[in-house]
Length: 217
Image 1 (cartoon, rainbow, N blue to C red):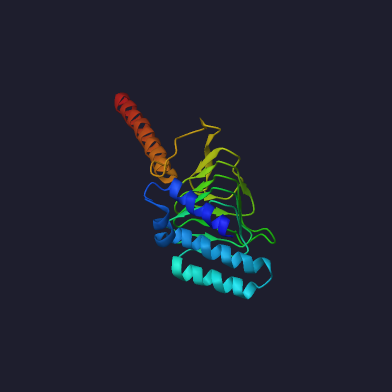
Image 2 (image 1 turned 45 degrees about the vertical axis):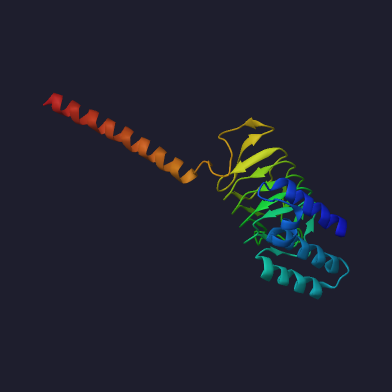
């Protein structure tokens, strides 16, 4: 467990440009503290002391604002940036070197039994406020944009955005659009633009009809 936590510590230092040194991460980063609470609670969960496991996980939630069920399986190098509002469900599986931003949820839909929560491959990024819901896989090196709602499998090396999420990039090639944490296509505004264009078209057609009637007169 100590080796795993040391790897977690170094991974956060390497991936967060705001981290000046490992001591700062160790003492001040709530995301790192949440992972520490999880590692301890998961240990007790595996040896069937589930009450103690849940007690530790709830203490971790109280102190860090991040709720990680002790039954989740999390690889090395998880970086929970800021941490507040992150929820990770019981049957979630997270690979190595993943990054999860504040407000993200790895949860279930309430319709599944057994495996209810998602599986993240290695080096997956889940943006702030994103919801990944259901027992499917998000492939290695894939990215989930901030605010996206993912309800279906995401292949390796893909970028998913929107509500519901759709793939906009695969293996480095753009499918439609571009990803960053800010400039994400807004499906509501896109639909409004389509409606405005249709209204303008109908107005032009009505104007033509009025002109033809005036010519007949």
